[in-house]
Length: 150
Image (cartoon, rainbow, N blue to C red):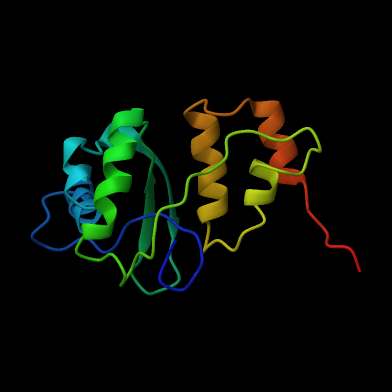
């Protein structure tokens, strides 16, 4: 959860001191998620996509890494002590990787949250690429729009 209440992914600008995009991303992960992020390193092989950002000279690069449950739990426990917690990051949110029998609860309902930029599409891309959700159920979840009763 970002500082503005929208959902997104950790990241930021690459500094001249960063040797590569991946070095910059790993620095940002440590700043936003805490020391537990250093237990794994995002590598070039975790790259998924890029798109032109809203500002001049800005290109956003998207990476996705499959973590073990132990790595994820360590990040969740340590994140409140991260440098940028409470500033850029308000908290971590787990994505439900299921759809309830009603076809609405779980992932379809989660996708109705407010996402920053292309984060929703990036999430769907990562779920598919990492084979965390079956393609058929992912398509249904992504295509469903929940409407509130009048």
